[in-house]
Image 1 (cartoon, rainbow, N blue to C red):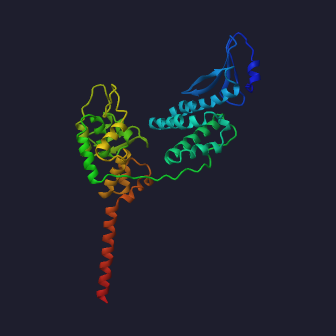
Image 2 (image 1 turned 30 degrees about the horizontal axis):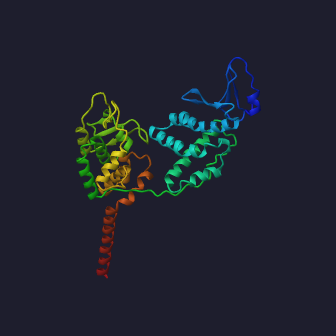
Image 3 (image 1 turned 90 degrees about the vertical axis):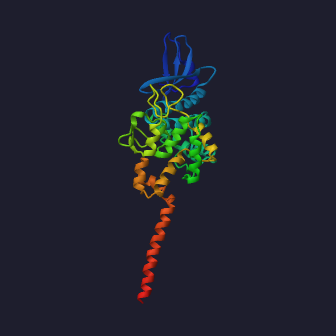
Length: 361
């Protein structure tokens, strides 16, 4: 291994057979010398258990420093292909790829991994202050990347430049549907003849409290009609059983099954599920006059209605598949009617005893 500089590259002699020079400072950065003497900068990394090599460009048009910088752009690819693809669920993979491709790579691509400072990270984070949730997610992904850079030996100073970068305060929004809004949405769903699959998906989300991905990728083999449950082999919190009511079972019973398609909510591609729910959802909610309603708000609404009907937080957590009671506890403030009634009952009892004590005197 050598320090790859302009001098060492130009000194690499033609030998009549291919060989490689690897940089002793930046792991995975190297030079391929062809039998003809042509020299190509490249990045090497392991993906899916196999060694991958990506050509960066020929020596001459680009310098070693330019190639080294370009190799840092390749680190984002390595992160996605070697780590994310192997350790993250599909929905998480999508979000990580979005963060890397749309925000991290465009902003930091001209920097070497070893040269990125906390000031660079702060600049990226502050540039997204108008969307604090997105800014914080990107900061989280970037922190994971730099932790791996240290593990993989790409960054050897032991410093993660994301440390101590203060995240923006996020305001949790628990939006839920009123009876009038439910009625309007129900009317739109009944009249959605042009996109019945999307309408059915939305109806099941409302009736089960499931996450979008759980209904979107629901297979018929997961539906246990006899036990009135959905047996999901995987979800955000792992395998789980979702109890469902008669109304949800009735919706499932009326969905036509398509030969050679295992999914409940079928898509246009043969054997596939409906991949794009957001576009039809925006059209459906607009017709119902609910332009600000998010799909995930349907899950909040399910939890709110259960609370209003007297279910306790433990039961709501089981229905929603929460692994921690703290996750469910954020819905407690929605139980306004029951809390108000309890306050009235308690105060009335106390007032009754106060009045009786006055009579005794």
